[in-house]
Image 1 (cartoon, rainbow over the protein chains, first blue to last red):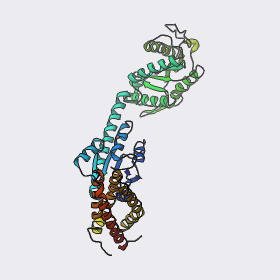
Image 2: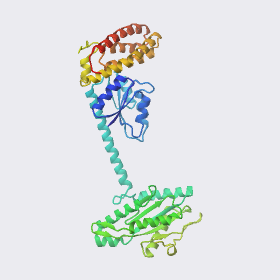
Image 3: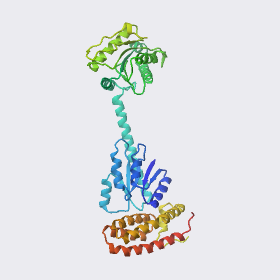
Image 4: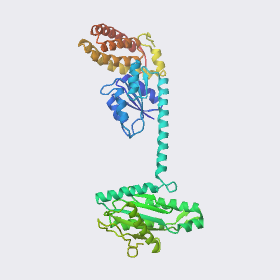
Length: 322
Length: 118
């Protein structure tokens, strides 16, 4: 584990450095408080620190609040080293944000034991952060496909439409529905249906850019948002996404299955005054038009909408794209 | 090996604190001898110029260094000087500085007399 030693006294610094190197730590040693704060505020800086109390520029108790100000990084466990022995000094030191203190000259056994305590705290914090992140993931992602869940993809859609309106940049909304999914479930069972959905989700995710969004909209429906997707690119990209599923069979527990999807696409930067629900209704209609036209194809809504328009008419036949 | 008088330099205590690492002790002595003259000079100047805050700071640094080297007597005088600086007892500082200089001389010669590998 990486540990920082900050001490202007070279004797003490070397003594600590050698003791901690022998104890297996990866040591970073600095001679003043400014350098200590700089190291500890780095994103990948040490999470364990031994700070001398009296140092030039910035003393140990002044380093602590500087480090605590940084809220976007993991907890830093800081131990003050001091030859001050007064209770008031100790109270001041701990009040500044330090976690512990050690009196000089330190006993190496006590030093190592106290650092192990710090490591336990950091380990515990790591587990809590991990648990929080797991909960956050579960709350925002679909448990079967690991894509964004419906609530999140809808929120992202609202945000992207607003951004598209504000910045006048085109955005494409793609609503995809796996064809004949009920047949897959009825023929092979729900577990195979799940395998199909998982693989479909994986392929959709791989076929978009890192800043596009893919979410599970419903049972076998997926919603994709392509940011900054111009009118020329949108059909091509939608086709690439459709083919990501249909071009290669999905390997399932009962063997390879050829799976296709139908897609409704709405692409513009001129969204009018319609709500997200209204837009979704339109793209849903386009998707059903693709189904009606024979499935495994794409259908577009009318691409250009006057700014004061309050509706859109899906164009199916002439815009069908396969 | 000539073991120093514990009151000046408690080598047994120092070795026990570094897991008997004689090479490290030698390195610490070397570092101390390199930096000590400049610290002593700054302390002497601060006392001469009656700069009590500087006396306090320099004495504190020296105290920490000496405690780490198990030089308890010199560390105790440095602690006295630190208190004098904090309490602005200018007159008392001069006598304590003389005592500290004498103690430091003994300490440095004891360090020299120890036969550790370099």
